[in-house]
Every structure is written in structure tokens, then in C-alpha cells.
Image (cartoon, rainbow, N blue to C red; front, side, top):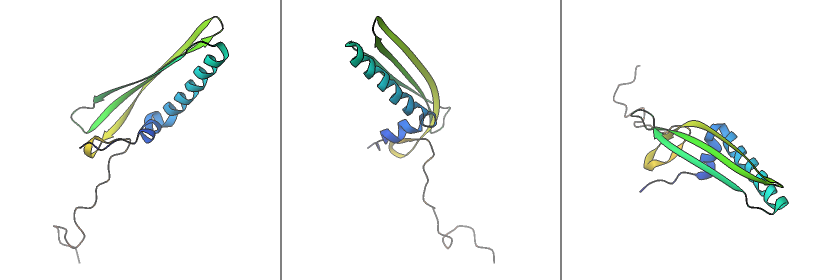
Length: 115
């Protein structure tokens, strides 16, 4: 069964946290325009995910596009960047590779200790 990715952590890791900040800014802009002008606004987040070579890494292309209603129409903005991420056990997506427990203790190590 897949291990769910922590959504808040994932969004905060995209572009070093800048993407989550951009989403917050866009939400405020759109909501403000909707209330001020009584017209609907729109915010779209698009995530395109592709594998990097034959690794356990993916490139996450994150795009934010929004439309803010204005008095005489609307204004729009969009931004798009990529962030490389690791895919761990069960499909969990994180910025850093999973840490695995040590396979052997010092006494169990296949190579004898130097004295």
C-alpha cells in the first residue's frame, strides 16, 4: 500500500518554500478581488511529474495560475518552476532521500574491526 505524502510538507518543499508562499499570496489576491468586485475569480495549481533518468527521483513541475476580478474585467498571472524530489518507500515524495537504518551493528559488520 502506498505511503501517503505529507501534503503540507510537500508544498513547503517546492522551490524552497517559495511556491507555498506564492499560493498564499494568490489566494489573498483572488479572494480580495472577488469580495471587492462581486465577480468570481480562479486559482489553478498544476503539478506535472516526470521521472529523472532511471532513478528514484522525479521532477515536479509546479505551475500556479490565477485570475483576479477587477472593476472592469480581470487580471491574471502565472508562474512555473521545477523542483527535483525523491520517491521513497511506498511512493512517499520528499525533498531529501529517505534515511535507512544501519544494516549492521559494528559487531555484526562483515569486515572485521581493525585493532
